[in-house]
Length: 313
Ligand SMILES: Nc1ncnc2c1ncn2[C@@H]1O[C@H](COP(=O)(O)OP(=O)(O)O)[C@@H](O)[C@H]1O
Ligand SMILES: [Mg+2]
Image (cartoon, rainbow, N blue to C red):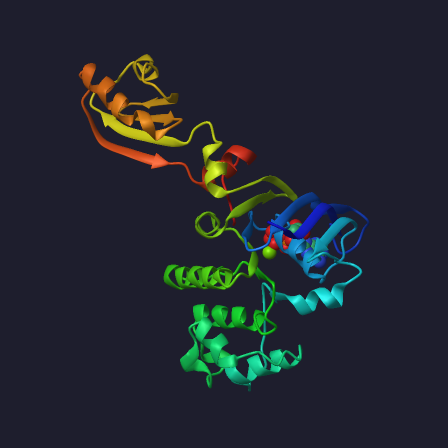
């Protein structure tokens, strides 16, 4: 697949305070590429540098050093040309209050002189057909976010940038937005998004870059990131008497035992040996209850990479 975005050794520094010369790297030597037709996600906690990275690619900010090529064009030299061919949803957006959704979309489309913008089709795409004559202030959070995505589509972009598209939405609105992102991608449009929701990255993204403190720690398909963990799953159960943990290490695939009687947690490297583990418990006449299997998630990948819980507060 051809690459539509290539980022090499990107660095952006900011001043730490309003005054004084001390600076820090909000984006610290970041490299990645995005393939045509993919949904690529930057996943990381608040302050990781996701928005700054996106804004540099979009041409809204300039990097201190490093190279960004988007649709074959250099971000610093061809900013105007790039803006015509991408759709950008900002983390915050405001709209003229006295225009309806239909009028706002026509207005945005007029900025691009794109004769083909079909407002009704766009409203249908984001499931707001019935709201053509409504005002933004009368929309729910989820509808408003879907409308914002419609505005990014008025110029038939080749790449759409979504910065935390579901932050603040309730779970059902979030799922409907996920479907919308998939629909947009289904039209052949490349999507690059940021999120601090693990399950969102896992559900939506073909590939994810895990970002923390300005750096990308790992990039891969969510399933591969999870597979690469030495511990992929956990089994937990309760026993009515303490068990010598050496017993558990006899079982195939067990990489670690947490023996907090009555609760036992086993880390296992594959789900294939669960039957054998249960057999071992039985053969030692261990009575157990509350048997649970928890497969690893991106959250465990993050924990493994950073040594800390994913914390957004
Ligand atoms: N204009 C700015 N001036 C100074 N610091 C900034 C500016 N914009 C962002 N930062 C800081 O840079 C870091 C990365 O911010 P940002 O890219 O917004 O992260 P994210 O989108 O992952 O939450 C944060 O520490 C943030 O406070
Ligand atoms: Mg951000």
